[in-house]
Image (cartoon, rainbow, N blue to C red; front, top):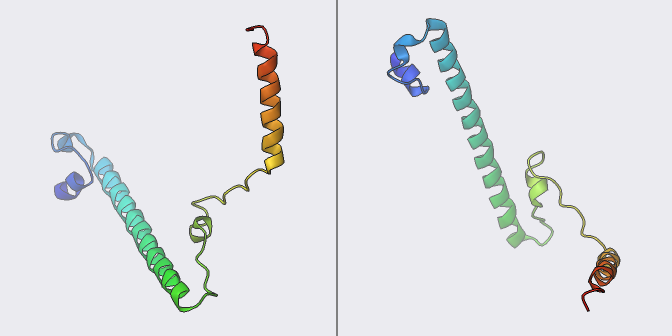
Length: 108
């Protein structure tokens, strides 16, 4: 158990001050983190292989579409927001210029 506790991050000098329950909880939490990390790695490797296959498929047929990042990783990445219309930028810029002229008019 000492070896597992040390692998779980228990300091060798503090090992003997832990109760049996604390050691078991620490080791269980460590195993849970390791399992979660393995599942995450497996999912990412699978997705990488899937995306590589899709990318290769684009060479074989122009019908094959490579997914956007938010489509490839739903729930992780958000869909990009649509850019603003140029008229919105123009209105903002004119407002900014008008405000600057009003503030700097006393500078000469």
